[in-house]
Image (tube, rainbow, N blue to C red; front, side):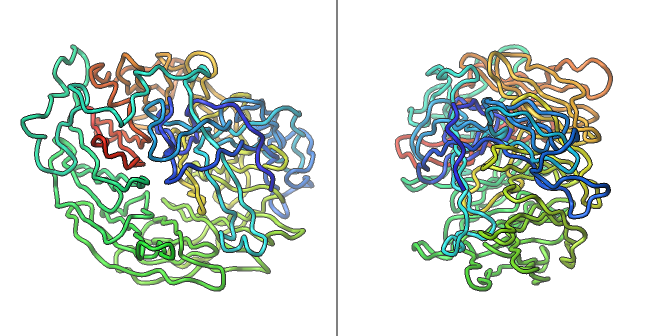
Length: 616
């Protein structure tokens, strides 16, 4: 498959991969991969997936020119869309455009290392949908440059698998380079403004040499509740994906370890857990009783696999059951895996199949294997539902992808939705309701569709704006749920636009119609990103500038007035720390803002940041 054309660097935004090198990026900018990946230009949006095999009423399949309908709308990301999301052409926009990145381990300008957004390709037309107008294409989701291997896994490359590439980079939201102060990297020596309060080693409050990060705090500014430094990482860098928070404890993964801190004061709640090898996958979700599962490598050699599973109790640090994920059939390996938790079922995604375990006992429940003639389940999304994506007839005339909902307990298929040839399912923005982003790189189109509980298209997003959620790297595996800056609830979808001149906006889109209901602009010149719904209001994060701290604001979702109301104003004195993470993960919980890294550079010149927490 050809790679998308080069696009200008875009500021971080919706869908931007995390784990990308720090770029003047916004909330949750993508983190950089372990090695400096080649920056592949992102592909233009393509037409949306096809409608179900036998949709009611005669309608053209995905990608077919359609008559005015939801599916043939131009893609919202970076391109004006037409009535239907599918087959909507995208216009050049910041989202989805490749952004320059620095190799992993190298400081990059900008604290958040944003990268091109999701770069949603424009959507193909569903039967009866209007054909989108032509025009330049851009991916709506900004993301890090990374290579994404198709459904049949890397091993299948030997027999015709396809490699997809997504590039990212990052400058400020006006297209220029961020100011040096805001781009402070982890290379700098600690100063009075970025010395630790409670180092990550769990040894207390930082000792006599620690500087009070709240010293000089101005009236009305929030407090730094606690701050942690990261553990040492190898010179090539290391992943630090995984952060889980409940009422009492915040748990953070970094390289080979799990750290647990009291949410109020940052004191260690249990001894750090150190695994034999580096952590290579984690469940983004946690069970109702706060159990998670992490996967770590089987060894340190080039032949090592990400196949060692360990259950952990977030409240106590107790290590429960362990298991080793076996390889499947030919070319179906556990070299890399994805972990998804749906209810009490842990789904481990291998290169061409999935293995389900009971999260409490570790008992193997079933396998989701190859089905039909040549459909290989390659990615899974968990939460309140279990969603599967399969690649079918790779390299053949009938090549396409299929979306399915599975019964988490049994693996039984509830429904199947077939996408048109050329469309790739890249992200699930929500599983309940199900909102899916797909793209067709060859046709330079993208699509965001909402599905009914029965697996039929309900609506397709139609917007002329470039959308910029922040999404993580998808290397070898898709990471369907790896996006920040997207909130779904109350039959609405909230997406951040890309900032092209001045501040960006949050769009409120009806899931019933796919059309915009209202929008709100960032209260400052910095990027604003949706975080979550709370008490009927949308909570959002406004990024810091080089001379001011970030903000947390609430926005009324009902009525006619949607003016952001400030909840927290972070201290100006620590804006360099808040703005200086190599890559980040953001969470709002219990009235506290958690900002953590998702990638360690391995720089030995100074202690790296692990996480910082703000509150009143």
